[in-house]
Length: 199
Image (cartoon, rainbow, N blue to C red; front, side, top):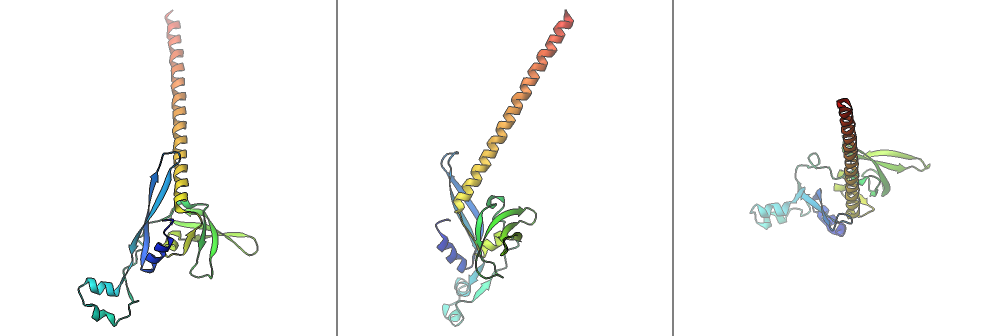
């Protein structure tokens, strides 16, 4: 994915939209390397290709505009969420549809109910304000460019997840050993009381 930005732009120009990301982890658990694949789905079909696949001769379609496309029903409502918490604090370039130029912003929050992200915008007077955006849809439309490679973001996210899991496991083991020690000391104490009462 990181090395195929031109190919992705070409596929987008043909009407393909991103639907999924798939990660493959290579190497050992401590220093895993990540390869990220992007799954795309065609959301519009070239009219000439439709006619040809339907068995119509190409002459019948050649008089029509070859740039004309037939729209397939929009997938945006059923499209899966591409990004969640793993992109927090990442810097992105966004080309807003209603604003000129590109804007470099940082992703500062995620609303798990609406599945939208918050970005921090720097205003001209030096203040910052938050704005809520549909990051997944903007990415599908080709309006978002991440400053870091996807593979690095996925790797950092995975290593953080592993570190948290390891920390939880260690805490549970410490808690279990502490409970075990307390149980043993109570048993010894109870045994001492029983022996004392037997005397």
